Image 1: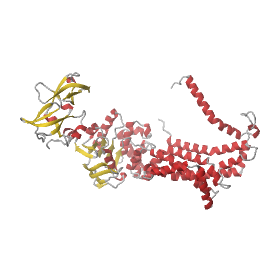
Image 2: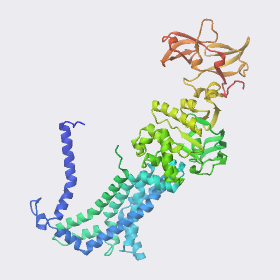
Image 3: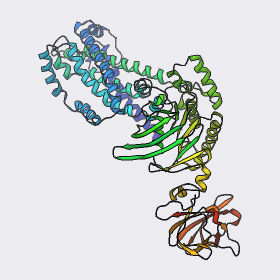
Length: 275
Length: 361
């Protein structure tokens, strides 16, 4: 193929694209750079692109027990909640998509309505419940609460994904002698996998970044990483910018890793054989 | 044994009845085509045979076994879908082998059988590919391979060719006919295309609104349509219909309609003086009239459609549009007066109210 000649319109379009890309990426890069800077390099009047890097911020972050506990709590709470969301949400979504009964519409609306509510409206009653049960400020309480979010999000996104699987493909599998469960495992899940993985990733990011509910359901033991990170900025007038930036980097890594692993998995499943 | 018997079969979705008291026997090795306009219930009936739709009433048996409550996989059937319905995440090999894997056939035998089927259908080069990398015709061939490999008692085809372009459709039609000649598996084939039905079928089951209008060989259905609907549905170009009044003639009967009076011997039909009837004549049965010929239909040629060997001439007679398919060399000029006649053997007469054929059995 011959390259297009660079017309002015095309040039402008490319410039806009580059600008948009810069706007999206620069804050992230700057955050990552700041995480490697000494505080003096950050609060200079003229921003510095060249500086002597330091790992002090990162080692400070990783050296603090509260951060490590927060990281552990976040990984366990979000990981478990997403797992529960997948185990319960996907079959539920498939059932609603393929075997709708007269309640299917109500179920879908109910699931969505869980997301209409402001989180506070959910968090306060839940806080009272967990206090009564004696599970306040524990991981199980957080996992169950987050599972409500992941199940509803995964269901909401997975129902259309399953509906998008052509019905005839599943019928062909029935004719080939497979039962409803095999059809779910061997046909519906792999065919819808692309959209489903998007739904799972989205639910993970949602609970990973969740702040308000975690704030209300934890006081010390079950604090998640967003809570811990926010506390770092409450250390008086002298804001430790480098440490804050390092904690942001730490906070951003797991979702990125998660997405990376998922998309790698996707590619391995769906890579087209080239002739 | 792979005969199919439907007795008093009903299908209803809630209060909507789709198929009503349908009785049908399909013999072993037979190729039966369900033909009808869209919404006539032909696909629903096929899906009931397959077990993909519940049977609301009556009984369906395949090979002597009542299958009403059997799962699709236990009915000894294989089905080819309109949109191929290949498993998109599997290779062609796995697509074809999927049913055998379920039957716990040893891997070595699966390989042998897939290779054999692939050879028959010319799919060997594609076994390692995914369905999306194949053309429509190739995909449909994979779907047929997937059905063949199970050596089913019955093949079910649900409009298998309607997603293909015209040329490929002809080609695949011939392949399906050859396949049936060599395998002799009982086949039920659903289509709305009468050419497919006429060329493939041993017998055609013509359906309308969930009721069988006529069952018969393609020739029977074409030559002896049992009612007005069948007569109008089968045959391209469509049969001409002329509403007429029966009268007693001097040595037979007269039909008065479309601005003319025709005389018949009428020995083949149940006729009574004063009956209102529909006279049906297929366009190819109208011949350019020679001098002195009787039973003339005449008018001015309004429209001429050139088909190659033939031309379809449409003219008005007594306020009624009539078409004649004549050899192209006899084609008149547009707006020229035309005169056509017909042989009595080639006409059809139907009761104008009930639509039933008046032909004596």
